[in-house]
Amino acid sequence: MSARMVLLGPPGAGKGTQAARIGRRLGIPAISTGDIFRAHVAGSTELGRRARAYMDRGEYVPDSVTNAMVADRLAEDDAASGFLLDGYPRTADQVDALERMLSERGEALDVVVEITADADAVVERLLGRAAEQGRADDTEPVIRRRLEVYAEATAPLAAIYEDRGLLLRVDGMGGIDEVTDRIMAALAARLSV
Ligand code: ADP
Image (tube, rainbow, N blue to C red):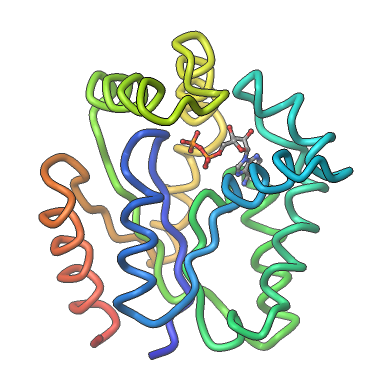
């Protein structure tokens, strides 16, 4: 099945977990810009060095850097007939860049899923993950900043995609399986999967 999808939602909404599960079910790669950046940081590449300063503060990496990285990733063979983007686009400029990348290939997005979550729950989840995984940007002040940046720069993207008739909203509160089932049901109604 060929689906070109974007997953939106605040930090801590469970995007990464759900992206991997939905990608597996649909047979498309789940592409997480956060994971790609972290791999570059771990490998001490030039890109990692540039991205790290932003990530450590909870700020977004500049669009030019992120857009080029995503264009490279989408050019790989496994993304030819579908993909699920997790954590991209996050700015209006990235929305336009993605549209250009796809239209150059004669493609367009099929659907955008927004996972919603209440603010207190996401802070609690992220602090829990900090204790388990020790991610560098999961400290309380940086979490707060990531949520602010999301509200300012990324939350408005849902309205852009809603205007284009692409948006599905799914409640991200509840168990992992429950949320996966909700997303799959919403997609089934939309994509006939
Ligand atoms: P979360 O959504 O939980 O904050 P991610 O793993 O998706 O975490 O992203 C971690 C960091 O990577 C972000 O705070 C940001 O610095 C950087 N990043 C990831 N995706 C993007 C993007 N599309 N544009 C700019 N920066 C990004």
